[in-house]
Image 1: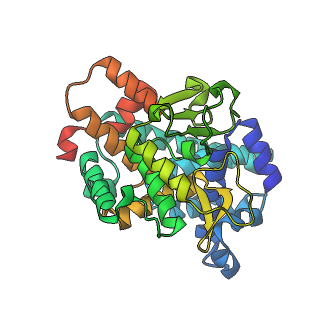
Image 2: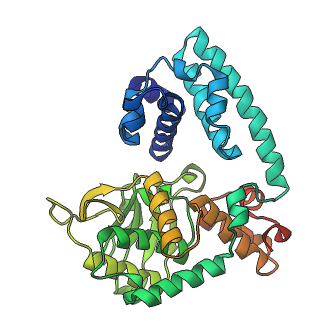
Image 3: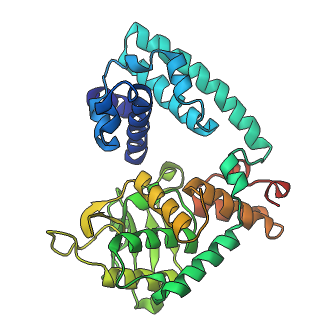
Length: 353
């Protein structure tokens, strides 16, 4: 399966973060289809399941079975499934692969048309989001209440690394803006001042250059993110509050297991038990810890990172009349085109009141 998948992502120039998402999506679909008849498949961890997939892809060559497995998925998740299966089956190069690739390509076109038409109406299509809608101001209010309750800016000095990692990931989303989680996946930290020139930084990674010197002027450098081929390197100054929080977090974070101090550690590092590792989170993992933190600590259920982007942009847009230049600036900050910013993320006022 790895050989087929590697050929597929190479031909389509798929980014690493997207590749990881596709692998997880295929593994979960495989479990959904095969798991009821196969205990081993049902019990295998998702991250290990992909390696066991049969590369002939016959398990998705019964369209009715696939459609039944994803019948309760959102339209966007169905679109994702078809978007993976259509070219992957074509990559097989067999007659059946091409045949079923075309079938799923037609389904992708049909569902993309529905999604596009719904998007133009600026309605909230996700039932859970519509039921649990809150403004971004309310989310910030709950976040500030949490910070006050915990003290120390919201960082629990005696708390677990797992909790503080989730808190700092959420803080980036709320105190800067909710970028796609893939922008945080490759995020490294440099604390030595003066900072190196941003042009000299490894373009495979994103960077937080943080310091208490330089009048506390710290920056976020984005090299590796979904739309980097359009916007190139992006550099943003971060707020004083976020800067202080990041400095405190890095100062008090425990050293990873079996590791010397790294010059450029990942900001968000996985834990094993109660101990940090040198491994960074995948974008899926980042999405999960942020959603869990917002649900459990801010008491706002079922808000994904995509939902958070929608809530942030919609709240921002409806606060006051916006000039075109403001929309262009904010969409750039979010890593979106103006078209995607306005059509995909802004919802009508009568939908949110």
